[in-house]
Image (cartoon, rainbow, N blue to C red; front, side):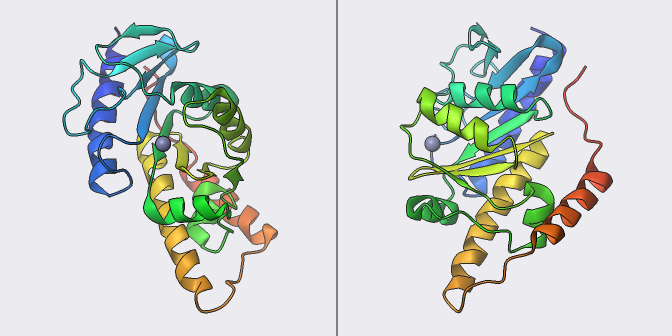
Length: 222
Ligand SMILES: [Zn+2]
């Protein structure tokens, strides 16, 4: 496999450890992938492995139809979801699925996170919606997640967790962290009074300013 795929595997292994250590996932739950444009392929974490134990050989490389090209592990059970997102969002190079607790609490309540924080508006692009419930690993879940992510960079999966995307692994990780923080702030604020939501115009302004400043992201394009 190419140097680009090898680099993608290494970055994803490091990111998986960061995601696990930040408490966004527990044990082997959740999954991460990285698109390698040059190879028209996706590197994805193996199914059911502790993030601290995953090696380069365990990482799975699949083509855009999900056929395994390389790797000793089985691809994550959410492979169809990751591929559906890449098809819907050609600008996205990294997809992270987490089970972070505050965001999952809102996913259980099936309550979207309104744009109440400026960084969420800037990086995620607006309200974090909730998909209708669909079984983990199902085609139905993949389709509904990809549809929602056409407009924003994060989504809550009903009674399940979070999917965050980015133009780099770092940005996707930041998105997942922001979703968790926003969920926490929303729940805390709601305990006092209904939070004030940013206007659509302000959300659009913040998003545009972010894209102008941070728009040129690097990725594994070699
Ligand atoms: Zn999950």
